[in-house]
Image (cartoon, rainbow, N blue to C red; front, side, top):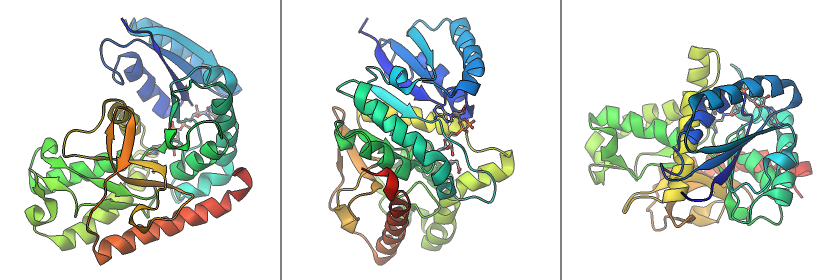
Length: 327
Ligand code: NAD
Ligand code: LMR
């Protein structure tokens, strides 16, 4: 057996946490040969609930779970952590946009960025799930000056999974036939889920679907608004699908993308495709050996460009709103 990998999870007693940590303990991130240590962070009022979750972890008798650490201290939670999954944050309710959570959630990411900077492992990799994920990621990254910025990512994998499923259903093809899906920009209602560079059965997706109007008028807004639709239907924001997306995000970053395919994560903006500097932007990425690169050479239409510009503009506005928390 390998040495255990330390995985910090914040908000571990919350809804996503409850759907996430059992899968990590089961080996879903790194495979059946790789033990893990779970370092679970909560706020003091939720420590009792976290104790209960830890009892259930014990009661699962997971062979790969080497240790479970429960704490309300960020310095303890991120101690030597190779992976930090920043989930703990308030969710929105009906009628809110995710960016309406910035004033409530932003300070969490100042504290946690500093604690990651001081305590995490040299190979630290960070996934921000708590909303608004891109700008919270920007805050954490800015407060962790000793961690290479590229190790901070925001999760757009749930949007990617939603887009992929919708294209598969529309084309009447299995999910595995749909590849090269991109989420551009922000995990918000301005994101641009890109079907025009996606493929179905290794062919460009748009001609396979044969209905550009459906892509522009139905597919794009449905993916953009899916989080709100789940809240309207469930009375609570997505949890199991968000946890699954977080698992997928780490799996792909750890194991890499398949030949010819790509995935999407929010990363420090690179300027590619005219995107602005200084925000966390989701791009098409090829990933291997824990490193990623933005897919270059995609031919963007006017429709693509204007959708990318709209989500970039929103990210700049969010960045301006949190200027006091950026160092
Ligand atoms: P939840 O309210 O069920 O759980 C959040 C947990 O975080 C609570 O247990 C709370 O005590 C804890 N918490 C709050 N502040 C904390 C802190 N400073 N340190 C540690 N823990 C803290 O919410 P949820 O449904 O699990 O959602 C969590 C976040 O994830 C929300 O912001 C939600 O909007 C976001 N989310 C993002 C995506 C995405 O695709 N990026 C998808 C779904 C949900
Ligand atoms: C989602 O996309 O489901 C999450 O970001 C939760 C939300 O607020 O929409």
